Amino acid sequence: MANTPTKFLLILPSFLILTLFYLFFFHQNKFNLNINLFSNLFPPSSNNNPPINIINNHTHHSHNNISIFSMLVKKEVQEKKNNNNNNTNTTNNNDDHRSLEKIEDGLARARAAIQEASRSQSYTSEEEQTFIPRGPVYRNPYAFHQSHIEMVKRFKIWTYKEGEPPLVHLGPMSYIYGIEGHFIQEMEDGMSLINKFMASNPNEAHVFFLPFSIVNIRTAFYKPHDFDRGPLNRVTLDYVNVVAEKYSYWNRSHGADHFMLSCHDWAPDISFGNPKLLQNLIRALCNANTSEGFQPVRDVPIPEINVPARQLNQPSLGLHTSKRRIFAFFAGANHGHVRKFLFEQWEKDDEIQLHEHLPKHLNYFQMLGKSKFCLCPSGYEVASSRIVEAIRTDCVPVVIKDNYSFPFSDVLDWSRFSIHVPVSKIPEIKTMLKGISPKEYEKLVQGVKSVKWHFTINRPAKPFDLIHMVLHSVWLRRLNIRLPN
Image (cartoon, rainbow, N blue to C red; front, top):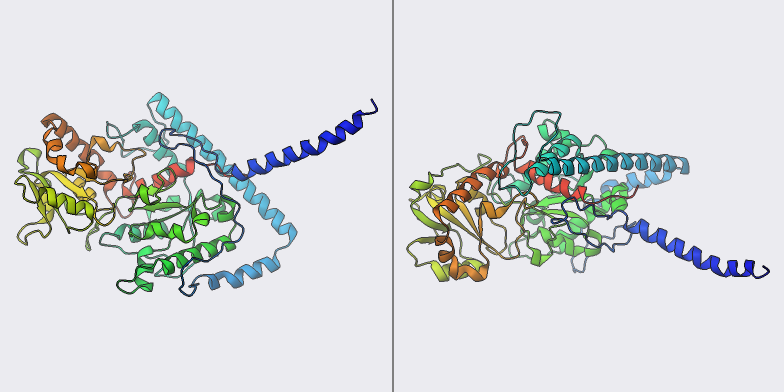
């Protein structure tokens, strides 16, 4: 008995060390707990990101540091620090805790409703549904339908107000980057019907939108033939620095519930400015190349759309399948190794029409509408507006890309309305397409028609249209993490 206290004293330090280690490890990784709502689409991912309390604004480039946003809030942040006392901080922490607890409870209910819809093959809604997603083009139409219902019912987005136009809060409204401007405007338009998603204050937000424009930054800070990503990286990092210093939300989640959107080819490169800092940021990108760091579990692939200058969507000029006389068609610049390979193999073929410069007397969209298959090869990058152009004319897209993450593939089965041809199989394209029976082709065309609405821009946005589909992709990724509370 005399040795019992001594043994206890020897064991106690080891016990305390193990306990502290467990608590520390659990706390650091709790926010990244993977829900696996769609386990086949959202496999668990590791996260070794340490807490970020101070956002460093630096890169490895030699340019002078560009800090155009930091001064906007520097004085305000300092005054807030000086005026806050311990009691205020305690109150704010309690409020944040209760808000986050309510948010996570709502997300848990949404997950349960989606899983029940998948099990019962039905949906539950308090509002009349104007669009019912059904058919083979959907991986799980009932889960998708209920998920969209839950998104409309619960999803709240806070758009940061910091920064001045045109680098922030504005974006291009036409041409191949037009989705960037329309999305930013839709997020900030108080009169829009989509405003139901806008959080009245950041404490009720599920995700936080960083409304900077990669296109406008590129225009403002670059001369022709200047390809250094340094200024771009510093401007975007500086904006993150501002919101991280002014608010607690970035540091709370290490950026895991924050997202940005851009169709510019350079957009993925912002992550290389500070990979450790931005490794959790949800990036909604047209240039969704998995070989260049795009991560489908975290990032959101979005379709590139060539938005006309005077209208939102291209005209639908598709003929009935029985009247389509062109077997396969492509018109576009011959740049990038994929297109060069395509032209080398098929430029002289009678049935596969390839045009680097379409004759002036021919209308591009009419040509798409007369074609059975529309070839959609990568150019310099994997993103291309030709997939949406094909869908809009009821032409079956033939996607010739490697390492491409297809838009909305969480819910859409692309094999039901498109053909995917790896670049190495370009010499076999004609054989592959000729091997598709008339019955199989008609099913593909019906699939194209079924998904057309999901690739249509509306202002204001409407349920299940392109902007809603982008938001739903972000919603799914938010469902797949749990933040600490």
